[in-house]
Structures are given as C-alpha cells and as structure tokens.
Length: 96
Image 1 (cartoon, helix red, strand yellow):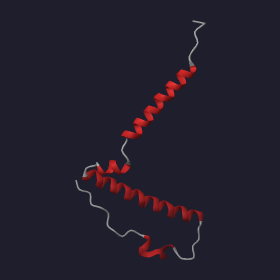
Image 2 (cartoon, one colour):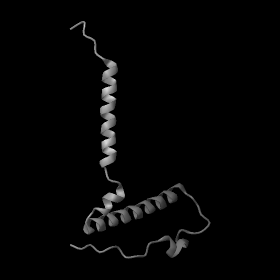
Image 3 (tube, helix red, strand yellow):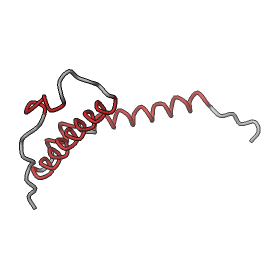
Image 4 (cartoon, one colour):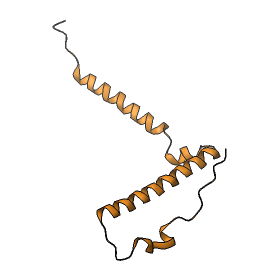
C-alpha cells in the first residue's frame, strides 16, 4: 500500500466533470420565476400577489422610517406628498 499512487489529475478532471454536469442539469431543469408563477393555481397566484404587495409596502415604510431616522430634511413636510405618496386602494379580500 505504500507504493500505490493516487491519480490526482484524473480524479480532479472526473470530479470537475461530475460537478459541471450537475450544474448543467440543474440549470436546464429549474424553471424561471415567471414559469413557476405561471404554473401556480389561481389561489396561490392571489397569495403570491398579496405577499409581494405586502413586501413592497413594508419596504416603502422601512425606507420612510430610515429617512426620518437619518434626518434627511426635505424642503416640504412629510404629508406634502399627499395622494401620490400613498396607495389608497383597499387591501385585497381574503376568501376562506
């Protein structure tokens, strides 16, 4: 056993080939976000849309909070944005 040598070159090429093949298979079989969304049922699409809208609102609120914390002083008051700064549409209904 002390005289046996490991073929490191072949081992490196084989392992790289296996990893590369796995990556190619993954890229070929994984659907894009749009394909995945299009395959959802209407109920799940509504939930995804609701979650996206909620995340967008939370991000806008967080951005506004950060602006207030950092003291970014605009020339106009906060409420001057009026209707253009808010989403006045009612929240979507939850059907049970």
